Image (tube, rainbow, N blue to C red; front, side):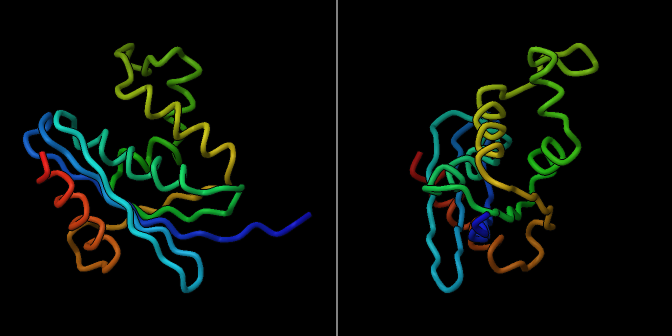
Length: 147
């Protein structure tokens, strides 16, 4: 079996007002190659932007890869690593407290991408000097400011 290429993804989201204008930023790194991407929406939430950053990064990959995602979003990391998103999907996007799960459209996309790639998620503390996280924050804020 062919060994998968390892891609490092760093991602962050930003929102003003929550809901309000929002942006996301991500860095994809393979060896010495690096790509920065960003985008935003005029009316959104911070969690939607956090999810979108990871989804957009994974969507750029043209074939299955081993992906290490680093983000300061507990929502994203815990949603995947603690199995919440899979459970919500299994229960027709209803959480254990019987309330509807938020952002099922984005969780569905992320779960599908995680089936294509071998993805691991690592939480990093935001605004703590982590160079890639700080850069992603700047990309997200700049994208948000366009709205």
